[in-house]
Image (cartoon, rainbow, N blue to C red; front, side, top):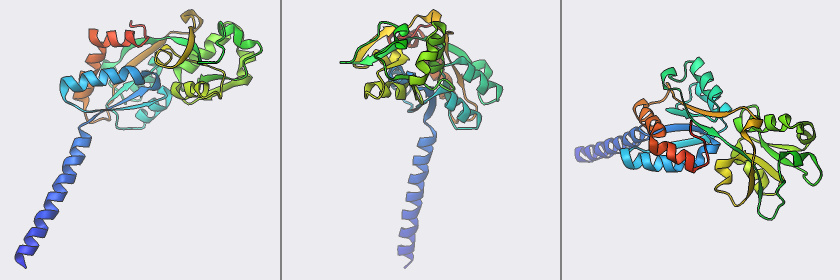
Length: 252
């Protein structure tokens, strides 16, 4: 009977140790919250980082405004890469991110995009005319690229004509999907997404909107500040800057 009890105790102890090990491994991952436009460049950055450090990285994409709100409420992220410096500043003001880690890592570019087989308007001004039923735009309240899209349309004086026909994506990936599936005729999306999609696009002049300054900061509610700082250094390095340029960003 004693042997049976001892064996049961050992099995329970090993099972408990195994669960604890899995939990510790999960806690050891670097958790990065980032704007949806970063999905493709982050694949390259994460691959390089994991090969260099042996660490594991979880990337959680979303709209910058929503991610900033989650971070301000204490979400356990280690690093925040926003599509707008303002959302990073909001997190810093709320004492959720370290002010000394604030860094503008890239400037985004907008394009007018449509899927293969559809007609691509010559420019933004053409959206005011006939033939374009729906225009997909990221929600300007919390998606910086959507805000810039509206600014550009206002700048050339066609927003009033386009607004009734606008379809809003919760982030730039959703915005792209609205047009790629045919629910919208065209979409205004980042060049970084247009480059890797099957479709056609034309650039939107950057002087039509405020600069899309993308910034990052280390979060204070995460568990791996050491890894977050290392990843931030990769982003700022010549290799990191080259990856952003490759994916259609301007590097300041």
